[in-house]
Amino acid sequence: MPNDYIHIILADDDEDDRLFFTDAFEELNMNTKVTTFNDGVELMAYLNSDDAILPNVLFLDLNMPIKSGIECLNEIKANSKMNDIAIAIYSTSASEEDIEDTFVLGANIYIKKPSSFKDLKKVLSEVVSINWQYHTNGLNKDNFLMRL
Image (cartoon, rainbow, N blue to C red; front, side, top):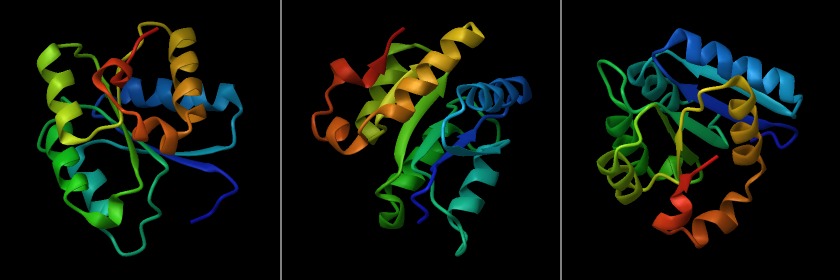
């Protein structure tokens, strides 16, 4: 895997959210490569392909048609080839049930989609700057939900 950039994938069915996400990374001017997918089916087809470059961080929307973020999370966690992917749940939902379910299923962090572009840039910068190995070693429910 190339080490000269941080490979980021976003799976989100909302076109505006995908656009804001990629625009935020362009403005942050970090050494990232961002790939987006429209839904969970596209995402999993890519991740399961033989020539897939696995992301360092996967931002996963929960509420997608056809294949939800929860279904994708289950598939990813069941595949040992994908053990090193840090998974950030990226959702409009802040329900305790969604937070609890994704924590139990093994996501690394839960982010409620920010309401402003400025907050989006801030949260994306923080997520990409996390030392994921350290973060996941001490993972508990208190540091699972990222708050702005």
